[in-house]
Length: 222
Image (cartoon, rainbow, N blue to C red; front, side):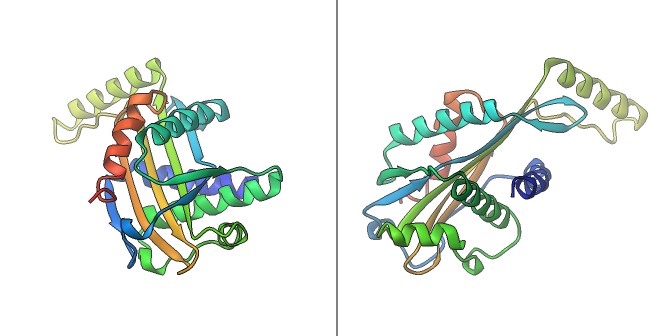
């Protein structure tokens, strides 16, 4: 399971590096007025550092820092009627849920039509067992570059620009944070709300997530 998560994470990394902001909003017949409460699953957070080339090396400690910052921003925001955060004592169930969130993240960020995406079985069964219709799934991906790497990539871009007489020049992202929220509807077995956004800012500062949430919840508030 862990190996599968790592493989998908690497694929998603490449996808995110080429992604733009994407705000879809409500994608089913559900509206904000239909949602009086929801339970949040533990956030999926993958954060790493780029020290060589453009390779992101993930770091669990950085992921936990980002998870805490994002969770605090959600609590302070108070837009979503979250009643509880679901955690698991069983590590196997926890890994399964994280894997399913990762799969949903991959589908949502890809070219799959949202209305064709069902709720994964473990997440669906947990919501039904708890008597809850709506579940909030939150994911966060990001990286920051070491100072030496960033300077080196800038120099490389300048060199390419000179060699191509200015026809091609790249400026690397120093930091990137991409976040998303999904509201799963266990009654209709589909996704009710989907939003994702990226920002060229560090995943290790609280202000990043305050701004991310403004984008993610813009269409929820309407």
